[in-house]
Image 1 (cartoon, helix red, strand yellow):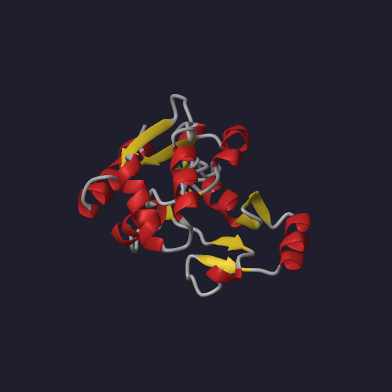
Image 2: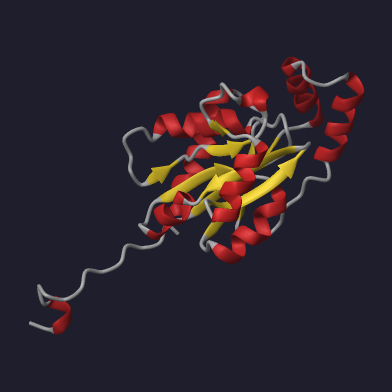
Length: 198
């Protein structure tokens, strides 16, 4: 029996998990696709869909977020309780440090983030795959109108900004969320399954 076959040899470390960063303009349907993928992986310990920290009181009742005051958010960030953080429209978001532990244990993590943290995540958490969710201008405008959060002028501005929402690289997977929901969720789940086995 060789050393590698010895029952006393140290256990092999699990293959590192993949960090899937879900990005796309507001209204593209990121949350809907993540919810669909999470439902498809219920009971599968190899896929983690972490809740993010957020300082927006409007989202306090959203089960996908852990609401924090601005002061507590700052304290936790300083303690190292978050591995990624960003600010959008005066709202602060953070990804819990448990994500790093899941990746080290071979679990794949799927989380929605701002494109502003993509490069940092690429440097720190390889392997990383970017799931870029896109929709056409008309669909995006309609979804934003249905949310009833912005004025017509604000919606027009958001649609214009979406055209500039570009992330490129060999690690980017483009997912068109302009078709029916079932098809889009199937595409999202397939992208995770295919990329995770590379």
